[in-house]
Length: 103
Image (tube, rainbow, N blue to C red; front, side, top):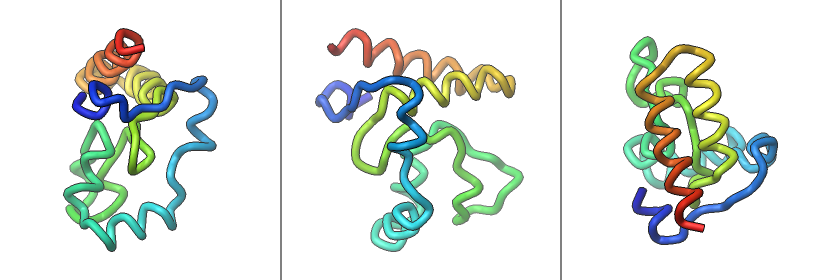
């Protein structure tokens, strides 16, 4: 929410997330430089089936390691609804609403 309020966001079409989502290499570089705590904050959920300090543990990404992406928020909202994660769907919908209001 802080990044959206501060204008640290990109507003693009839903389909753009596949182009803007960080690559595995970019994620690894970020984790090596900053650790898993900051990496986790780029995601809306945690998968407890995976161990701590693994990338697989963090699910529903919505940021590109620098900015919030509207397409990432929309993708997370849609996937959360499809996979029946209502808390994540609501959180993504809230961010989606903030992105629309802050225009």
